[in-house]
Length: 451
Image (cartoon, rainbow, N blue to C red; front, top):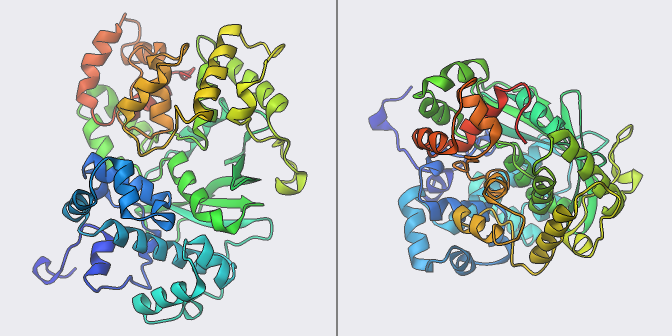
């Protein structure tokens, strides 16, 4: 290793690029998980990064980003320079470049398709950016042996920092998989999605890590999806499987409480499952109120089969049970939901949620403040604090969301003894800002996980 005094350190890849350094062609930094430094940045910067990751700067400018975050352009740039050493535009440019490089290496997409999928407005801009950065054309950089692009779909590697408890993730998803919409078969998870008005399916499963011991990969296979939505789908997949979680930092903090020491040793790398669709997850949470996980899953399947759009068999996987996409807010806002086994109170709550979502009174933008979101969601009759916190945990990816009244958590923290929500809340103060991960450890300790 070189001496520290002979090395320049940067807070982000974008900062290094702005200083004139180009990405290495051998270690492939475009496949590296998100920088742990980002998790220590301000709340505004973290929310801004989520919006940039979703592609907001592809269609709008920094002014629009600042408006969404409730700050001025100047203040936003100052915050980004302070925490990341680069402007929002530089972050977006680097992100777009790295994603395009991955598509060149891992897929057989044409140059035009790669350019559009990565968010470049034209092939010319795409070529110019690569020449400036790598001193080579995209065609010169493309690998000839594309191994992950199968005939049955477009495949991409999703890198993450080890460890990741994939079995724990699948156990959680298996019992909650909506029949016809999701399925877990063997070590893979598959589901239907709708993006850009087009329905399709995705499969996520482990992939062999190439050579870096500290990193692993999941393999995302996209079926029947428009190529210019690949970036959106990959970002959603990363959030859904919590691939950017700083697992080492989380483990260090939770291990300060003796309860978690054994759990972390037995199941290192437990993540918080996210959601592919915020409305879908919230409906599922409402259905799960005061009934078992299995019963709620059955009701969700009935709802999907009656009101969801059937998917074209050519757009799904062979020998699969996937058949429908989940119903839209517009469809459920007027649905009677009779003879499905759903109580009238739950039906009314789902319709109220659907109408509020349709009118944009409720949205599931992950960049919004979790506290404000929970307060708005609880204004809908039939949605309480437990549901709001659960949705914030899985949809907004709030790492500190916590269901203090959850019966499973109360039982797990001190088995055989009565624990009140107040007692649990006091103890959980020591788990901030990672209480959502503490909840996952507690649920995983039970034979019957919480909802």
